[in-house]
Every structure is written in structure tokens, then in C-alpha cells.
Length: 349
Image (cartoon, rainbow, N blue to C red):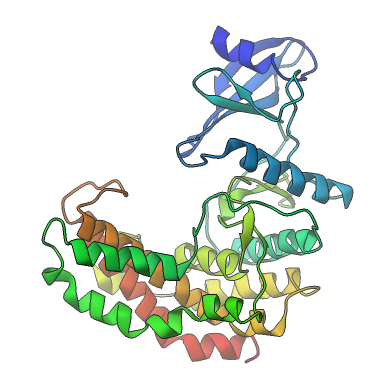
């Protein structure tokens, strides 16, 4: 643990480090609570940046600093990252990249996806976008083509052309269904090229547990800012609903369990429209139901491409795992597609 203490003390902290303890079970970054002499509560958070995923650490931290500075100037709560004593936003120890942020005291996160928390999430992520709608400084695309459906479809076509493990024949039904809807589902990219749809500063990882709450249930701030980058508002809207409105697990083998929960949709949409009221364009609002379809469609494409490629990207627990994920995600897409007209009606179209 001495090495971690030494890393923390490379930053502009106040006091002397007495202990560093693991914090949470993050899937992307290793995170630690940092204790300072004279206090039994954590003062800082030390985090190892996963540069296998976020390969441009300078861009990553530049994005985060621009976003948090902008939010702070508007008098709103946000995460606070420290500089190193050498004036950098991260420390490189020769092998790994590290950053330190101020610990937010008396804060909690929730995992439950209920209509109440979905409304709060919609409002909070909408307000987050709204706060950043006038950010003039450009942000980098930290994961290029992350939510670009045309790029994901190209990856699928490439996988089919190579058919490296001979699986294409068994999944032809899903390929036919996916490509049958290609023109409809690439609408966002076409609208962007036509100059009708803008890119916004989006969070790109909208989940209930990416909000910090105080003990009275009020949202303190949005967290996990690594994926903040330019994208369509469809990213924050559709990606939340892909997981939150799914009535079952992402890899449920019983497709009868899979449905699209309209109660979650309505609650999240109500909050999101309140949060984005000041800047959302009519073309963005009217295509929110499209976004609710786009993300299960895109995730189906990604799972299927990985299955055809021989399971090189997503971790699997058994040989057909990615095929099961493909089937479950496609059922979610079909259930959302069935409710598309109801979705439009419920947001006023």
C-alpha cells in the first residue's frame, strides 16, 4: 500500500496520507479511498485510469476538466479533480496512469431501476446536457465511433464476409432482419450529414448508479465522466432505456421474459424532457422513440458481430453466450418496435 500512498502524494493534496483502501467494484478502473491524518473519513479518491479502453489519457482528462470547470462556473456541483505537483491532471508511474479527485462526503448511489429513479435519471442527465449545451471549447471523441450505427453495421458486414469460425449460416435469420431495417436505423447519421441534427456534449453512459445522491434523496452530481464526448442526444436517451426498460437480463435464454417496460420509458422521458427543455430541438425530441429502438438494435449488431468473429470482444461464460445475448437483445428491439407509435404519442408526437 506504500506505493499507492506515494502516488497520492504526487498530487496537490492537503495533509498526510494515512491509509488507502479499495473502494467499490468498478469494472473499468481500480478505485481507492484515501484517508488523511486527523480524519476517519476518506478525503480523496485515487483511481487508476484504464488506458486499454481510454487510450488517449491527455484527451480523456482534458475533456473531463473542460466539462467540470464549465459546470462549476455555473454554480453547480460536480466532481473535482486535483493536479499533480508538476501541474498535470494525471500521474504516470512508468506503467499505469493515476488520477485523484475529492471524495464527496455523505453521498450514496442506487442500483435500483424504478420509475422514480428513472424520472430522476432522465431529469438529471437532461440537466447535465443542458448545462453543457453552451460549452464552446471542443471535446475529443474519446472512443471513436462508439455509438455510430453505420460503423457498427460495417463491422458486422466485415465479420460476415470473413466468417472466420463458420457461424454465418446459423444466424442468417438475424442478419436478414437487421439489414432489412438498416435504412430506418441509420437515420441519425443521415440527419447529421444533412446538417439537421447536431452533436451535443453527452455523458454516453447513462445509468442510475452514475448519479450521486445525498441522504435525503437529492442528486448531488453526475459521476463517471470518462465517456463524456460529442454525440447525438440519442446516446444518453437510448442507452439508458436499453438497459433500464428491459424487463429481463441481457442474456436471458427465455425470450418470453423479455419486454420493453413503458412505465420506465414514460418516467425517464418525462424527466428528460424537463431537463432538456431549454435547448432540445424539435428534430431531437421527435426522434427520441427512434433512439429507444436504436440502442437495442445497435447492441444486437455488436453481439452478433462478436459471435460471428468467434467471441473476441465480450467475455463469455459458455460457447453460445453471444448468440443468446443477440437473441435476447433482438427480442427487446422487437418489443420496443411494437410500442414505437405509443412512445411517440406519449411524448407528444
